Image (cartoon, rainbow, N blue to C red; front, top):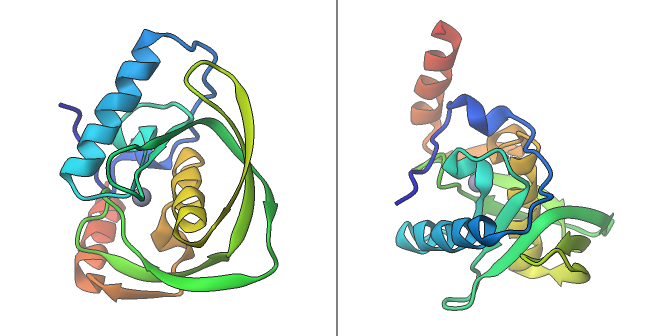
Length: 164
Ligand SMILES: [Zn+2]
């Protein structure tokens, strides 16, 4: 089973590479990512979180059928913003308040390479923005106005990073 990369592992800070091969390996990876996500009670997972530098996201906001986004791009952010408490499988036990656009439009490909456009709002919009940040090496702690839980843990992880 795939292992989740934890902060401050370097892969989480890299810009993930675009996907051009829509092969069976890609489908298998998406399946395995979904499995890891559900096992750890996550609602989204980006490929860099399983140490793969690929622009691939799985979203499982509703149990059962997960959604796959290949090479996603956000083409519109609403001016209307909302604040919510976020966590991340790569930063266990750490939570923080993040402000994001309430509605987005996203352009992406499926596992066969077909292009789609979609409008997202609510939890799905937040999850997709969070996961797309992962593809660009950005973590929610970079955007959080306030760390609500796990402040000391985060400080000790950051100290570890400074020692390197
Ligand atoms: Zn995350």
